Amino acid sequence: MTRRRTRRTTKGRAGGRRRPRVTDPSARETRQAIRALVKGLRQVSDASAAALDSLHLLQEAAVATHEEQLVRALVEDRVLRDLAALDAAFSTPGLASPELVRCRAVPAALVRWACQALHLEPVLEPGAEREVPAESIDKYDWAEGTPSSRTGLVRLRVVAAGFRWRGEVIVKPAVVATA
Image 1 (cartoon, rainbow, N blue to C red):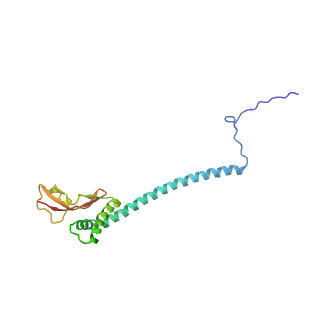
Image 2: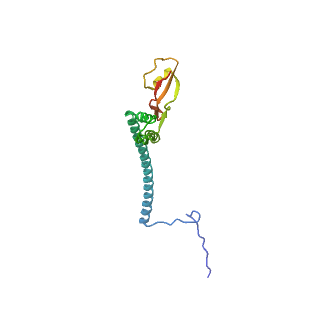
């Protein structure tokens, strides 16, 4: 008996591998369900990322609003200017009371804290003297009345620092005219 060799064809095979034919309808439905689940999970993941981005934006807006409310309250209630005046009063020589000596650093510490926490920048240092054009005298809070000269240069001395917030001067420096 001779055995005959038959040649096998590779019809329908890609690279010699054959994809198993699914005849069971429940297996086909299972594959479709898995594809749908993966697609749904991707959509949920994308939506979660978008929601997280929105939450971050809301958080930043809430922090900015709170900071603005604090700064406005400090300005409207003149807290920064009063702290500067208190600091100047504590710095005068002749404070005899030990209680007052202990409190000497409090006003300056509160101003430093406000500057750091609320991103305030001091504008001019108390005691500084300068000459400014007469046209710019509106940029200052004149403690003893506005100078009469509206031309040339005006000499002034800073008695209390001003404050800038987000690039805008919110408290003008308090100044007096000097001769």
